[in-house]
Image 1: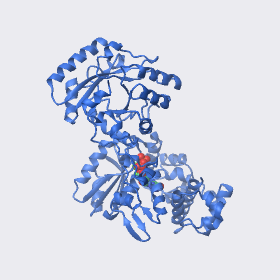
Image 2: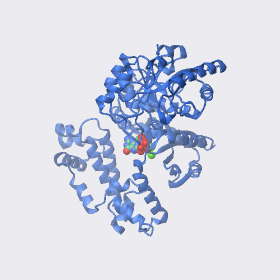
Image 3: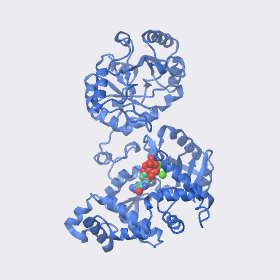
Image 4: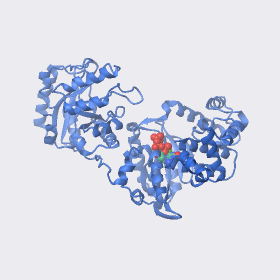
Length: 569
Ligand code: DGT
Ligand code: CA
Ligand code: CA
């Protein structure tokens, strides 16, 4: 399907026309690009069936643009676009990706300094050729350099877990402002994606300018990319960017829906609106000129004939179809977890005692906490059989001493290269449950790694496999595995797969969670806490479970203690 390709060309044309300061036309091309992105039918099919006349039925497409679509379908390019690019030979997409650089500034940079590529731009900024240009200055030049740095740095993505505490803090602060009505983080943060590009806040306010002033002067803001009357964009000292928009109350739901994304989800929902003869935008849901929904997201989805969809699954991965049929999953709630089954103490590489960890878990309202220190792993001060037995006695003592929470005896046992475990079965059998995990030789061929893990799963003492793939986001890829085989084995040997909530792990990831759920494999959401404050990471694991469409029943630690223990029989 060529729809997206052609849309991209039209966005490109719009940029070049904007650069030439042509009136109205850029907007016309953008509009058609949006229409093409949303179009359900293959534009090529439309053309084959009805020729140019049929193309003209696409919203915004007139004779002129229809000809261009035809040209693209026939030749794979559009001469008009080629000519525009020849006239001003700049890498438009590359350059406008730099924060604060639009087509008009690109034009000046090209005319005055012959800048065509990102490389040219960086060189010019570093040699201070940009600052003297009219309309730029020292600050703009510095911004450009920082913008380039940001693009280079890990493509500018951050771990959700790094960003999330800051997002909550900013939300709190904004809420405390009397000028602010509603506040929500939108974008990938609201969808709880494992990594975040930038943070997008939406607010309602009767005094937007006050909110802008407040936002750009929050502590820890090191740079203001832009500040208008209802929009602002800043950089935090941690290195990520935050955008804020004030929107009218009557459009809040549609703005939230739009800016939550994902883009793919939005394209699909707009398509549904069009099908119903409606138009959906960030301003509202319209029939002709009349707004029929927009204040709440629920109202919009309802008018589209859909159930409201939790943000975490808005990725156009089947949620639209399910919502139309009223068949969305009832995903696990953030308050559904009754205990954590993976935590470390000073017995291995944790920072707190068993008792301190238990009290912290109790304070979170948990019914149980599993202590699962490392086995013989040398770097982590791991336990051998003797110390593990001693720890079990200690847990018995503490269970007698503290009330209101049950401490469970476990351990995180290494799966050795040949699939055997590094603690004797006779000792493992005395634990309430056993977590087995790989901590060495991550790079094995797929078949061998799969066999290695399945061999461990076959051990009747093993109940849970911890952080299955071993990936560390932004650091190392997960091991090569045949997940289908692992899922079959998990069912056969009654093994539960862990969703590890450490910000850098989130392993299983959302996609694998969904596959496990579909295979009917049970999971457990654990934090793998090495300090008591890490128990809070549970939220990140729950979020990934939700992104993987998991329901309460799929996750064993949503169950009260008695029921939980039945899984370990
Ligand atoms: P990020 O920041 O890379 O982690 O991901 P998002 O999803 O937060 O993306 P962002 O910040 O670029 O934009 C926020 C939302 O705005 C996005 O999820 C959907 C919406 N949006 C942005 N650009 C477009 C677009 O070109 N088309 C459509 N349909 N929606 C867009
Ligand atoms: Ca974002
Ligand atoms: Ca953004």
